[in-house]
Length: 153
Image 1 (cartoon, one colour):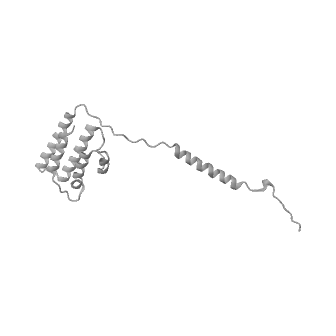
Image 2 (cartoon, rainbow, N blue to C red):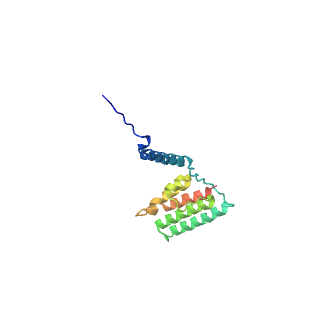
Image 3 (cartoon, helix red, strand yellow):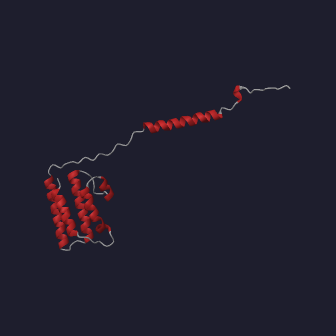
């Protein structure tokens, strides 16, 4: 029984699978290298800047709070508008004494800034400021805001 063995030439096989494998390997290695060499985003550091004379700033805002209280007592301003002005006052005060731009921050943004006094006040203002029917004790809120401004160090 004769058997014949015919071997194929070594270059008769297709190189296409080998080329595809090499390309895939290069792409995967490139992606891994890009991920490993990527630098993390720098964490934003909050630096509190002390103004040269904090007492002048306190007096300015205490006067504005008193003017708001007078307008509320004389019924010259609506409850909603009073809370809006109070929120604007305390946010601008914090910005002037710390340098942290909180004027356009949401309540959740303010909570992440680690300013618990400000977040407590703004949270108190939110419902009367944005609810369909504004209800709140504006005199109490003004008193609390005045105390925060007066005691700020």
